[in-house]
Length: 386
Image 1 (cartoon, rainbow, N blue to C red):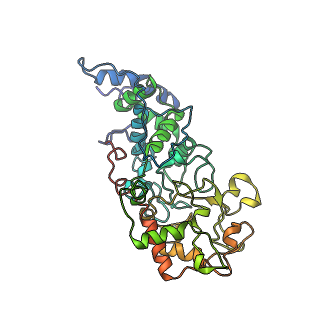
Image 2 (spheres, rainbow, N blue to C red):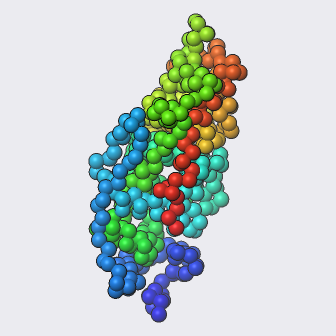
Image 3 (tube, helix red, strand yellow):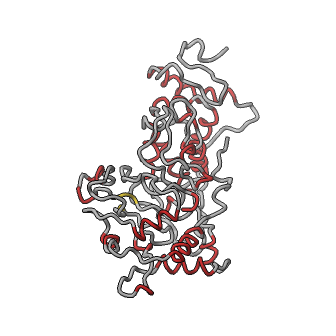
């Protein structure tokens, strides 16, 4: 006999791994019943020979090259193998969306550097988002607020917002908990991760944070070059020099692209919010970080993104306006728009541009492509476990 039939719940089976809640949000009493019975369901499905599920606190070790500085990880959420695995399950779980067709991985494609190939991702209601989906690799080295506008203080906060966003997954967390609580694999994995089968929004956010922190990508040719394991060609080396050389209008032969002004460090980003000269004051349509701070000084300032795997993550900028890396380089070389909040270093180049000729631009793009980690796209540790 179906356990839920006699309860006369609005649940319906759709043949998939998860229940399909087509009739609307369940009454709170059914959520409570589902949670209370989840452990019983799991134990009934377990054969007598199977061992009881217990907590597993085995640490998860991030692996990265010697030239990469160890990240500062959240002290209140130490990585464990069980929690990272649970986060991986949830990252790929379509039951987190209202109609069970969409997961985090839908808009953060592993093959695209955990970004989206679309300019604006389409949610379950067929509605487009307002900004291009940001890549989520090497997040362990990215600690200063999240989203283009910085509205999430911590990565764990960022992890839940798309679930409840009506333009994205359009689901409420109570329904997510109820759906997960009747799945024995989740009951078991939450028990391994936390010591009991209690599923809460906080636990969901902590494990999603752990999985995203586990996505490490330092296997590019540039990394091999730093380790003495690969040699960059002449064009790539010249592009490397241009990337780190400062703009110098007085001696053009010694002038570079000055990219490291914003894209610095081993992760090629500065963990800050900046206005990179995309629009004049009159043309601005997105207030960026100002939405969070309320300060006019933060208008049109956006999160500086990592350039790692930039070849895999077009289109570019917060609104996806540039389709190619060549267009991005052309913007910085000759397309800076002045505004009240544009970065001063970029404003200084507005009259002359960066003085890059065609060969300079080609060499710079060649170097940027050296930041591609070919192992990221098919690393089984990040793939769907289902």
